[in-house]
View 1 (cartoon, rainbow, N blue to C red):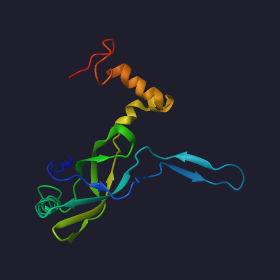
View 2: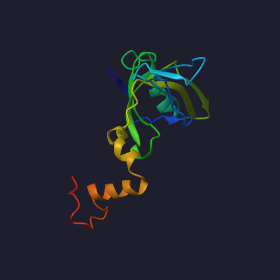
View 3: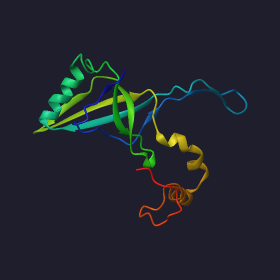
Length: 165
């Protein structure tokens, strides 16, 4: 079971906008003809380079969370933390992560900056449930569909579906 990231600490920032995914297929290039692609797996990890910026008190708590055998046990345990997958409107998604190496930190005055690379065994993305809608309907339709399903933000249309509080 993944160890939860302390909810009172600031979330990590992606230090770059890249997510590195594994390749789930093998390519063979014959002497003649087109390349041959062979699917190997759907079990693909995603890697993120993350940065945390802390005050002294937050740094102290994060450091203990990493080291303590009751929590990450020197970064040896999987942990859960909200992280943006960078896929549009889904925002922050709960991901199960693991450090690939012990993260490093430096101090500048009273600011502590931690940096580390994490992997996610499975990239959770709430857009996956709506792949056909997102792919098949061009951008103007997405906003119309939202109004049809949830109604106008100011509730001016009494015939749209009722909102669940």
